[in-house]
Image (cartoon, rainbow, N blue to C red):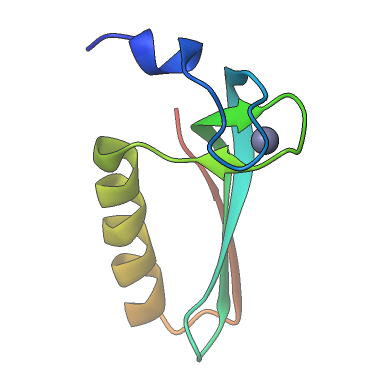
Length: 79
Ligand SMILES: [Zn+2]
């Protein structure tokens, strides 16, 4: 794992991307899953967020599990 992407530029505004944490919200159609503490690269200028593939896969799994429980609102946090 490298953090080299943290040094790249935002394709939208040319600002600097910085490593940080965000809150990710997914509407499954049956309910809403809120995942806190999601590591992401965040543009310091426009606030656009990028979630890397391994994290996105983790989120997909969490969302699939949560929608099976048919919770209206589920709030979770990544480590
Ligand atoms: Zn930007």
